[in-house]
Length: 376
Image (cartoon, rainbow, N blue to C red; front, side, top):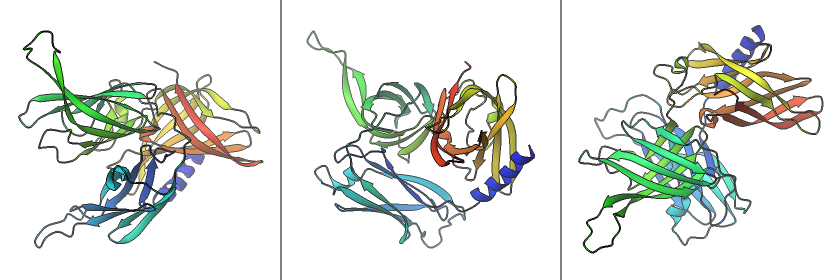
């Protein structure tokens, strides 16, 4: 346990560094004509937040975040506000616009270049992300999604309210390309049949939804699809609705912890030098600790057969508005030590898969950390 706590202190020192702006392009492999979305993450310098401007050419996309200074007499709370903003560059450029074979994506904050990414188009294709069938909820009260996925096709039913306070629902279907999905949303109303025979219902297009799909989280942007005037934002984060979640994982006033408690088959995959290290393990919740403003919670991993302690998973909360990020600490297999980290949204109901790295006598090798739930 002393080693584990020492590693925790080292981990905290690493995570205490500033969180820099980032650009992420989805899906992993982007084709010349396929879906393409850019997710920008940063934080506003105060509570007045800001706006975004986009400039698109064949070879360059510039995304500008412009903080609001506030009008004279306005009060901007001195609080840092994280944001996630995403862009569909094909919508910004126009349907017939042709990009070069590679495009530079730049993110600027208040005139300062914060991050740059290079996108090279290819035709490699993407494996559709697994997502759990069921109910998904967000921070908007009495609003939710019910989704179903079969292969690379996902359907969704959106439940909401209109400006008159009446309940509404919309239906959509789309194909998942990697972890990106776009779908038209339609509602249906019963029609009065004047001349027999006739259809019972007629569809009405409500709008469009675009999603980033993760194992444990959906990031959805709507266009003309949310009828209530009280909904002032169009991008929302959805989490799975958990009915049997351990109560100790619900931390007051915090984003949720991943549900890792239980029995799993887990470990690191091998390569030409070392074999797979997959075994039956039991994961228990060890509670929380903290240094300064950083909070973290620990899960202890032990062998199911003997109860021998193997390693720990620390979930650290740097930004209270986002779910904690977790990493494996103290994982040893023979002469090798392995490490990985993963986001809350990567943990599915029955599995986790995360890229990992192992270091040993033969040098560093790439690996994958797996957890497959073994209990009901």
